[in-house]
Image (cartoon, rainbow, N blue to C red; front, side):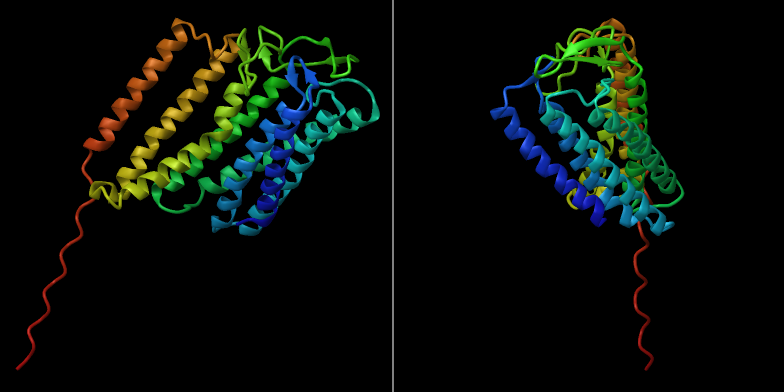
Length: 316
């Protein structure tokens, strides 16, 4: 395990506990949502993603020292960035899009913006390192490569989030005016959201594809590991090439969901209210996944290993 990333994940888990308590005992709100909701979501998300990288980075065989330092940079940047989100929650104000000029916010926003760029860059470089080497069997390697590329794409959506929405003034938890330059929503300001996630129910929300991209890697790794476990009971799945093909189907599904939710969000459409075009795209994805699964299962497996030759008769 990569120790700095493991420590970062442990700190995020601790923050998740603190934020969870805050949801219960602190009645302050921002846009009708607890001031601790964002801290809880980011803490859980980074704890899971950090553990994924903590397991992945030591498995790289080439450029191991470079990968170690990249993982360390990601861990340090994540602690600073999510720490700023928690600090702003404690202050009862906004961490994202906040243009107020008080010293804490002004310095924090500069560091925060730089951190997003840093984490995106680190993930992209690690993804490139994965593309030129194999980690584990073919299924796991495919899951990690595609998952990290999707995670990087999910982070890229964050740059579009920063430019979404018009500049507006809203109250903080104490009623003080705060000017926000950007929004998660497209076609509808932040506010009316789903329980827990707070994804918009009245318009598009770029946090949806951001979440899908960022956490596809966990889904794909679970698929690859699950197939390897099933192979102990299902002889046909002992074929590494079949497991890789089935993992490829999972990659198709994750990439398709990411593409559809991105398209949906940019059209100003809520995840909770898909139109005919979105439903048709989802239907096409289901058909493609079904067809790809059928093709994967119909292809011949690896040839059986030849039986061992009988021992030569003893001379006598």
